[in-house]
Image (cartoon, rainbow, N blue to C red):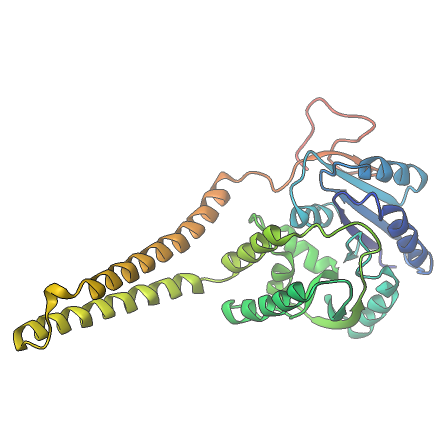
Length: 328
């Protein structure tokens, strides 16, 4: 019988954790297979840590990973997958926008289709602004246009993955992971599951505009070389415009239809255009060089402070810390 893990990244979720755990546990009780919940505390600054510790004491099927500080949502999901030993895993946010009550239906679909991945597609999204809805739709379609890999649109990290996909994911060592993109890149059999996304039951979003832009930037730069091609194209266009302008001024000076010494406007236009193209090209190159710099340093994506209820996990236990813990 296959074992199921629910991976839940958490950051300052004290307002929703109790209800999130209750709803998820009620769903898991209905299943006949062995189940567990893996909570990843991403350096929360509120009472999230103490709440998770209390839950893990009362429920041995709840495992907890505490980060040493806030590393971000994607590293938290990555840690959950790295520490998962189950046959199947469902990635689920703590805010309950993705209802845990759908898990039995997702499992049934996966078993029926013998799929390796079931990605959940949002038919609607309650409680979100028009700005976020529009930018989200544009982002996924823009990513599909720019990337060499086709991504399912209108999806998040809410999905089921099997052991085969987790094993391949664990081989990937790059930083700045765009997890939904990496899972699409892995391949195998992937099928959609359509659902209505709910509003947050409490608290506020952990993805303000600044984090959304950073997330989109990482997704684009890690999965596409087209920005470099676009920068090259702009550079070529700038050179072409410069040649045409030079020929026009030279011929005009010879024939007499151009008065070059009074062409301040054309000169300034050319300078601004070429300067803008150069800065844009250097900026794009700088982004890719920055990614290379981060990869070469090879720092860990996250640092585990301690864990709860991982009997065979090499991380440090919260109740029995080691003097020289092994790398998680």
